[in-house]
Length: 443
Figure 1 (cartoon, rainbow, N blue to C red):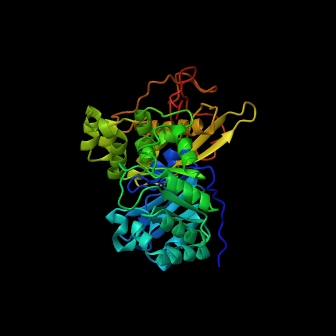
Figure 2 (figure 1 turned 120 degrees about the vertical axis):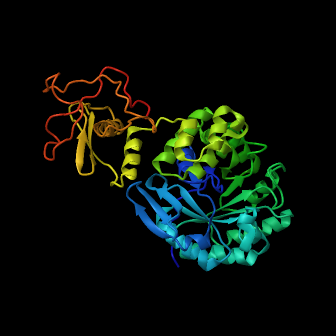
């Protein structure tokens, strides 16, 4: 028996629910940015996952699980490693264990979908179909608890009677799982039906493991404070948010919802950074827009047939580092490598970026490591004659006033050039604007 690493706590947590086509890496990272404690990936079917090969993607700094047809089925990164839960669709204990062992070193927890009522999940006896087979539920969960190093959970719907529901969850608890998520609706019910807070409360009062309340988006959760109200109404340990988070992931933000356009632009930046397929990006943005799909921008988005067309509809502030990464991908170059140093005297930062075995640096010392890396990326982009701001620009925007390096003739050297190996820590050789608004502020 393998001892589970129960480092993931399910008490008093805000959780992004698993949502098919929505819970991909850009949405999960966005939810974390806005205050979610735990994020679930979309349900992924065991038969698809066991065919996948684990690949370290050095260009994106991700871990990819790649199908035989080269399609990325699941992508994750270090940022979420301690907070992402992998949800699988399964009806077989041994397949479930094979998938858990495949992904366990790259995720924080393993979850089995036992609640989704849609055919995508129920065919083959998965999802809510498992609710009518408690023996199979027990075997799958017991096998996972004994065989994987990560905490195991499951997500269910309630049964037609309270007595049957409580009998099932007590049997589930005895398998040794770490927590149980409960969608407070029956298998045949849909969002327009009221969520049964009373049944979730009865489950929470019965079990000793954390109960995660789910299903409150339609009637209960419109803003951050509603999440706590829903938790109290259900007496649950934590709350899992689905559609309210899909519509605006800043629902997790204590300070209140952020403007939708700002949220969408931030989502697009993650989609670009992690090479999300444009069809998935488009789908998630359309879910955010909802009734605004008939607006001029909404129509552009709906008609978009590529990532570039999506960016034209909702132009996001694409950072220089993202532009450089995108260019390296197109040119089939290795991922840019940044070397950053801090000056002891004033604690400012300077960075050197290596691209295609050439090194680029800026004269500008910045107040943060992040800004220094962006400045180095700008130098590389300018030297290549590439856009340094939004993708799709015809030419780089060189509006910023340049400052001469201390030992340079103001009229002499170029504004950007290559660093020579061995000269990296000698004199600064590229000048960026000084005394003006930084082009990197806010990135």
